[in-house]
Amino acid sequence: MIMIMMGSNPKPLVHLSLLLLVLFSSSTESLRFEIQSGHTKCISEDIKSNSMTVGKYQIVSPNEGQPLPDAHRFTVRVTSSYGNNYHYGDRVQTGQFAFAAVEAGDYMTCFWAVDHNPVETLTVDFDWKTGVAAKDWSNVAKKGQVDVMELELKKLQDTVSSIHEEMFYLREKRRNART
Image (tube, rainbow, N blue to C red):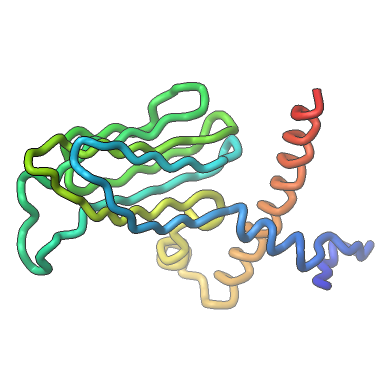
């Protein structure tokens, strides 16, 4: 059991299982998938409001070290469950996005492979991070000139805050599902 002491009134705030829950809920999705030309592939992520989200995607060259063929392109769109657009890339081979989620819910990233004859199969690397995982800790360390211990403490503090917020988010989500 992990116990975190707050002030002069020590209270157990978090059990190991809850810590693991948050570590998995502040997610990092790193995927490699294939998509055939003329087809679509969508990936969704449940994101709570005010969470930072970053994503990076690219088509993997079928011939390492060689430039990608012109037919290896797709269109990418990131939308919220309410239909709001957060990112759009048309006929691209690589790209990235970053935003703070305004509304809670399922966010969807869809990839539409450009139609090509003969059919091409594209291999895509997609890295999607939300919550604490989305923070660029290397820049925090550089900007603040903090030593390693302070950086680790800041990470832990953000993780604990994320756990606390996630508990309230899940409780509210469960409450709304019952009604």
